[in-house]
Length: 299
Image (cartoon, rainbow, N blue to C red; front, side, top):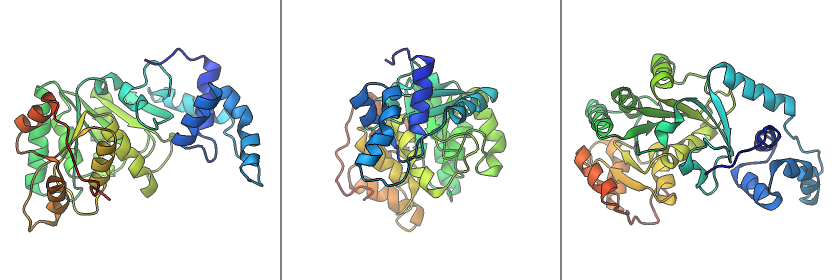
């Protein structure tokens, strides 16, 4: 449960998270050492000098942090810093947790039973059908579907679970639409479910942002289902994060002749639960099965 943070401490946590060279690990360690972000901010220049930095560390200005909060509020969203009462519990227990997330919609949907459905952007018709039918069935069973709003499997999963609850984790800012063809879908998810991002408004998604997005997809879920994935795909990165986070890892098998099944079939060989229908997912999640997968997964 998050504590009630003062406005000054909330602002300081946002500034700390947006300061140069302060990632999730450093943010966590600074809070653990100083107990609050206000003292950590004051100590940053000294710590940087001790670490051998010869140039002045760029600390996020209060005005910039206030502008970010205002921009998110203007679009009807909410900025949550680690320690806020509404900060998702599953994300708060990650190692390390994300310091800041912005949310548009009902983030409480992700606090209950949530399953991630991910897969290939270049999905087959069969893969999209499987993802859609599974998302709809999971919604009927009371699960919120988490995915990344990409083309293919993600899109099919989101569309099929709009009525029952879906959360899209974005690689860019909440105000950035990507891909463009999902503009209307992104709007509907914000209205009926939730959009989540670690990035400030105005941030266009870049390659380095997608692993962070994938980590939140698995982090918000109690398990992930990979429907289609090539050997080197973002879905396998999500599976690796899920494994590290102690989430259930499940995969739908595919033809050995289809390169989109190479990654999912490898997950199965290394211990992921084999999924054919929603009942297989329920058996894994409700049975509390823990997947014992090899260390080579997604390496």
